[in-house]
Image 1 (cartoon, rainbow, N blue to C red):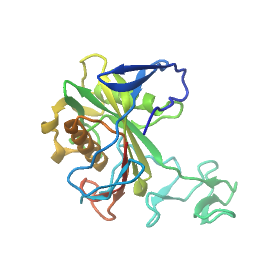
Image 2 (tube, helix red, strand yellow):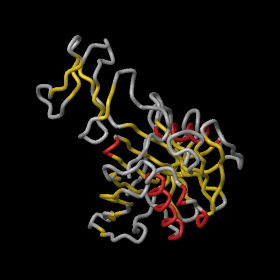
Image 3 (cartoon, helix red, strand yellow):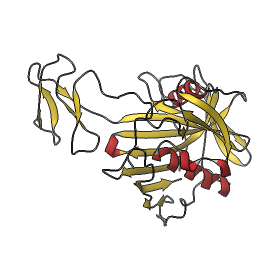
Length: 289
């Protein structure tokens, strides 16, 4: 059972309270305020088969029919020259050192297990780590807020406001910032909702449930439209990414069941499929609390 998340890099004060029969915990964040609530256990996903472990978490393997694209459109590579590696998921082959510009060699350093880019000049090792994508599933009047992308990839398709977390901010702060940038919406975090890992492309999505502080929103520079959708009107055939498809399907299921949970799962993209095919994936190791 998820009880609380500590918001790092800012002052906070815990104060328990109750509302609508659910137990809540609020955290005051400087300069933004968010509240995190406890989530009940139980549930399944879509119409896929599921099993429940003795720990109270649901675990299952859901098959749909992909490869996820960069959610913010810009390349995540540094100034180093890089080329996609044929194996190793999202790993990039770094040809030049990001510190001195020297040519790299690709070997397994002593005491390690993976091939790394090692500079032949300064001998520094380039380590590649997954990127954290944070965003908000904003609820208002039993509707959810979606943005139509005004940038590539997935131009013209709908998504939740989300993007890469920045150095110096917490995940919650990043999600609030992205929502403002893409939807000009001032929101308050309600609870964490889903963490979805996509190992093949080196991304982890952390999506928070949130609510509007004021009923105002408008397209930011990366959006052409921003709109509230009723559950039955969510444009599932026009979503930008498989991570958004999974998140919104889980949300609709929880909303119709009247009980929101926290979900964790791994989206395994099917190699060789088009980035525009958001259905080519398996959702593995689904846990919910």
